[in-house]
Amino acid sequence: MSEGRDNKRGAALLRDCVRQAVEHYFLRPDGHDASGLFKLVMAEIEPSLYESVLAHAGENRSRAANMLGINRGTLRKKTQGDESGCYRLICGGRLLRDCAREAIENYLHRLDGHDVSGLYELAVTEIEAPLFDAVLAHTMGNQSRAAQKLGINRATLRKKLERYNLI
Image (cartoon, rainbow, N blue to C red; front, side, top):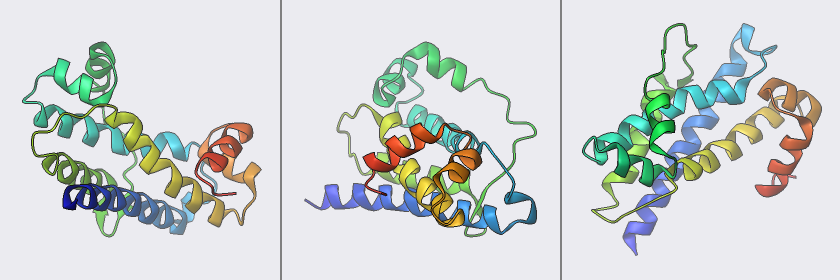
């Protein structure tokens, strides 16, 4: 019973990190006219997710890929990326990437040896809702402007907003 509650707490920490980072981003003078925010947030979160899962899997790429719900080739490509020149999102005075790593490692630690799969999709789900909510708040509910800032199609945004009951 408490394991489920602890895992929900880890997911809530990740959601809060994303929400704070996006709100901080929009406080920056150059943050208001940005587009591609979804890609930017994912670029911050993915390395922490992959590194944490790989470490949890004892550097076993097959096991890590299975836990993430992706194939080994995708994992290899994603872990060989160059981070130079990447904008850093801030969450409560810390990098979003560090905050995400803490939340993910907390989640993995609480699994206590249990097998898990589909972590990538779980992480994306936990990231999207607060990201979309914060961007919509910034655009005062204007979905076209929100989609532009996120760098995604408006129809895609609307579908995801319905999925997360945000409209």
